[in-house]
Image 1: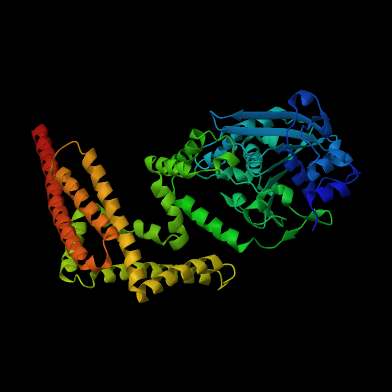
Image 2: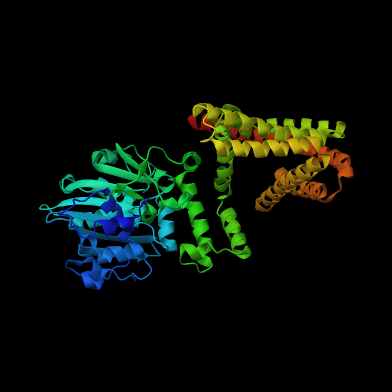
Length: 536
């Protein structure tokens, strides 16, 4: 298969008058937008591309072919604008190529290697970006009544082309004859009025690589969608310079890579469950870590050492984004099952009534103290068995929806096989059961202890809940440390102690629920008395 550089060499001697503009030219020009241009050379006038591009061509076959060709090297360029601001998370660039006497192509630059550019991509998921507003401003400034325009961009640039077209006036839009979105995300429905897509959808061509991830975020339905092959693999297919050409056209296929479709499904469901405010907290916490360590580019940010990983975890936890991150593996394992259970009537009832929680803890605690011999094994097997059962149901459901296409759903099947294998090992090997079970149980108890300690520290009134949380944090911390460090022959004693702690915790929760209900009743009764007095 041939590359973009091969295409440029084939068409090198043909101007756009000789060989009309096509979809491959669109990809070439959008790829060129990532290169550096000399704003002084362009100024307020039009200059040839080979005179204003400043990158070296020695080790770049693509740019070398461009500069030497008549078709692209002599192409006139104007209206180059570049804005970069860390304060507003803005990485924006656009320029205009003169194709014919009255036809111009406006190309918006996508995400470069800067950390600012990458952050701006994520900012799009919870608010309008400065880059999007500047795209509208740019089009309003350069579109004239005596010209026709093609708007294009790759990655974020494709989003800017669409956003700009959606938000300019009808008069300006009437001069736009076509829009190319080269694997760029769509408009976020929580941020933008997606009904504006109706204004442009008949003029849009969307081009995706076979392994498509970025272009599927907030995707819209268009009639003209192409899937192109790439010389790269996996997520690197997003790079437009790797897209392949055959006989002067993009080499296309009928279907996306099944693995990328699975990622798209997980990402879409994750975004459904995560509010824009949660997205903002997570994005700020992640990029704050990289910025604090002096990273200015994406490459530098990815070079995290142990300290960097710890800083990232701390920032995520302190920004209250841990639940947001935890939804990713939840979606991978269970899809939207957990979300439906969490929003169901039973979940709301249990959350609203501590009495139920107290009764459950009391009953489990008493059973653990009575049946100490087999309680630990029974609990771990039941919990992991439930995970395997849910995963089995979910996998079968997705296979059925996909007409039992095991190739397309192979990743889901792999996950189920791993979980089922782990469960099988635990069933037949007591040592494995104790290691896995004690780790899970101990970790959970330490988390409960820490949360109780935080509730104790944050309490300003030394009431029943204050002392309850203090005692609870100590007891659960001791139990968690014990099951992690103690040998397997002490499990019976551990279950006896833990059962007692859970029973006491359950009884105290029952008592506290009655105290809380009595307080609510007293406040409500007092409020009614005051209303009666006021009426009299």
